[in-house]
Amino acid sequence: MKIAIAKEVEVSERRVALVPDVVARLVKQGLEIWVEAGAGERAFFPNAAYEAAGATVISDPATLWGEADVVLKVGLPQEREDGQLEIDLLREGSVLIGFLNPLGNPVLMQRLAERQVTALSMELIPRTSRAQSMDALSSQAGVAGYQAVLIAAAALPKFFPMLTTAAGTIAPAKVFVLGAGVAGLQAIATARRLGAVVEAFDIRPAVKEEVQSLGAKFVEVPLEEDTVAEGGYAKEVSEAAKQRTQAVIAEHIKQSDAVITTAQVPGKKAPLLVTAEMVAQMKPGSVVVDLAAEQGGNCACTEAGKDVVWQGVTIIGPMNLPSFIPIHASQMYAKNISTLVQYLIKDGGLQLDFADDIVNSACVTHEGTIRNERVRNALASEQVIEGRV
Ligand code: NAD
Image 1 (cartoon, protein in one colour):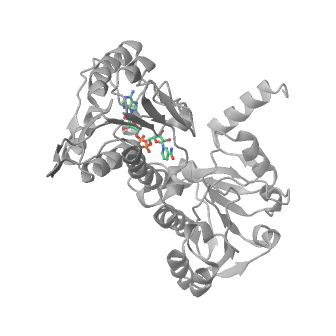
Image 2 (tube, rainbow, N blue to C red; image 1 turned 135 degrees about the horizontal axis):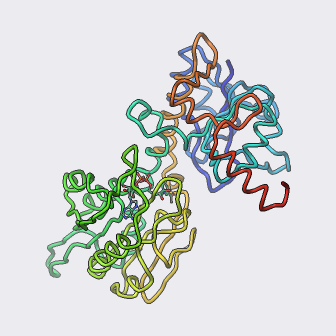
């Protein structure tokens, strides 16, 4: 079975789907690995490192995409520089795995189904303990949480740690993390390592202990309603709860030098936690880094992909943070995606057992159909908007 590592078309995507160490392990297990020439370059893995690991470097994308049994990517199939669409290069019956953002791209999913491609989306791997080693959303969110703090520290016109020097004592920076899921917990840990005093808030009271174990203070907002949905995820809360949490957040934000926002409710627009009025109350020079920028932002002043300075406060809405740390982000992603591939291999070939919740959740298209109901619904609404039905 030929497994191909495709080069990411977008130059802003510096990650690669498999790193040479992982390739060596797969080759040892008898798999044939092809790598598109230059696929690892932006993550500092040269072609020679893949060859040394036992992969074959392929220069012609049409050969790689058209003859592989499985194509591994980080992002979506794209239009190449020569105008060729990667999706058109895939052969019938092949398998494509990557962060395909199926709900955001239902038309692309339809096209994959029409081309008889089996597509598995890394975003749809369930966040369960059984699937933990394949959970690329979590591994990459951890990278993002770390990088968000480095961005905040670099933008803040202050030190993060307390310093006792001959030139006087410097007080530590105060960091407030909103949302203590995967990215938030890594942000807390990173800010603590840099010496900041950290507070955190999350709508799920269960994370209190984890926050405290990282050396941060948990900001509590007693609410009368249940905030946890099935599977342990946060629920969208009522208007009254929103107002109550916002009032508490406002009090803590006033005192903070840096605010890192990471709140999300699966499948919904990011909850608005930081209003423009709250930003106006922050000290001049303070920084907000909004990880939810691409989902609409947790802060009212956020613009995705931009740094906005408003009333002396810098609001940063970074995109694709894992790509800032391409070596380790790729290493972690490679572990996740290779575990999935190995999980699917039975008797020398890929076998999809739809009775298995990992396979059933991750597989978006198979044998000409879109299997995922939410993607089918998203496609239907897009077609209605375009007047096609
Ligand atoms: P997660 O689901 O693990 O954590 C989100 C947390 O937000 C949960 O703990 C949840 O309880 C909390 N939350 C939900 N509603 C809230 C509310 N109203 N108030 C307070 N807390 C609330 O998600 P994650 O994997 O940590 O990702 C966090 C965010 O970071 C997402 O928006 C994700 O898309 C984004 N992200 C951005 C990048 C980037 O490069 N910019 C990369 C990875 C992840």
